[in-house]
Image 1 (spheres, rainbow, N blue to C red):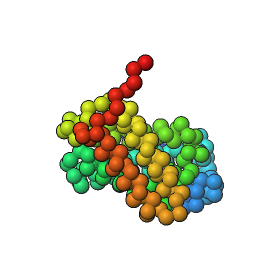
Image 2: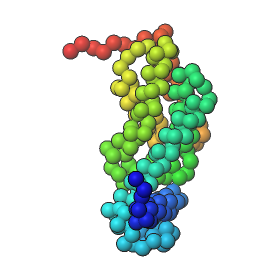
Image 3: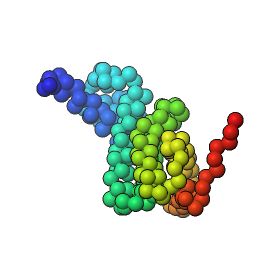
Image 4: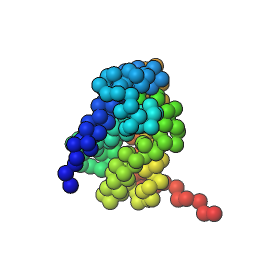
Length: 207
């Protein structure tokens, strides 16, 4: 169905607000940017902002969603381009994720501001929504190839994403970020090696 002119204008207004807010939030942080500055940068009215979003926090949520979606797409494409071997794809994905989180805009919006603005649960849900499926697919491929022992995929994916989230937060706060990033990538590699057939994980305890 063709979209109406009103729908197209509304979408253009929304995109202008998200684009302007992303640039400002990424440069100075959520708390330092006011709605008046955002609407001026977007070239729209304050009323247009509140027509599209509940408040500044709602606009930030849209910005964070866009950034997360872009990161996930970049990691998926980049990891697949580096290797077709499943565990190498996982390693490449982890490295690319940590590299993306080192970018000033991503670090400020996703790591420093999002947990406080969105709330911890919503922030973790955002991470899981875009990263969980990618990790599950890569883990299942690794298990199917015999590179990783067969085990429940979903809890393992949650555990690995949780580890990467904590690594990203650690790197963001480290004084020597390049070294911290290398150390975290090495730790993730060791974790993956622990799931190889030669390092059978312990069976879950019986109740």
